[in-house]
Length: 293
Image (cartoon, one colour):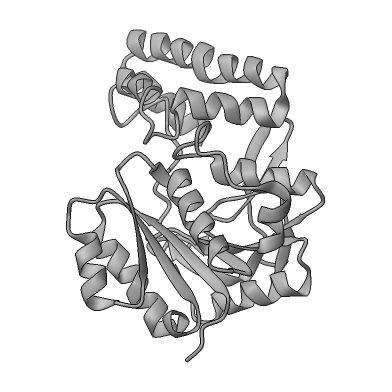
């Protein structure tokens, strides 16, 4: 069976069972037979690559040394797919499980208009609440948007868990910036940049995938770990709070004002919360939390 010029790019690192479940989902949906699948294994030590080779020999495996991170792995997969003549590119996280026909429907939407980048709405499998999809930028705030009444919802940025784009996007924009955004924010910055260049960003509420929300909101009134641990996250590439990525996220979207916003929101407010939590008893903070709710 001749495969369509569509390449599904899956970045992975040391999550063998999760990665195999993702590939099993694609197999059950018929996507492995229809499309090319690239797994970019960024230095896994748990036997991920050998397991894939054994169970899914048609899957293309590209190796990293552990320093690609998410954006670098996506970029490496895109570069390879482009060289192979890909017409459409799918970004898919390994913990994201598309429903049957979801991938083909995203491709159809992009085929209808090459100036569209389409994302499938993701839902948490445990709560069935929206987890990842479209992002709106309003008054210097980032809002995850969802409207079950709107099948196609325009947005300002797309989470990269499950999206589709045409080759034209790469021709006009290039590849995601893995230097400034190694693990987080590269997806939103890349898609938002496309929007500024005339592309429509569409999140499709009908073409869905299951993906657990692994970045729940933090309650500063009752943090689930010592606050200084959150501060240490500012210096960890694997954290959404990694300072270089988040600072450049604000700067790219809001210019110099974004730098000031970052300093206020992420540094000044952090230490104000730290002082507050340090000097107030947990019972008092819990009562404040109940009042807020």
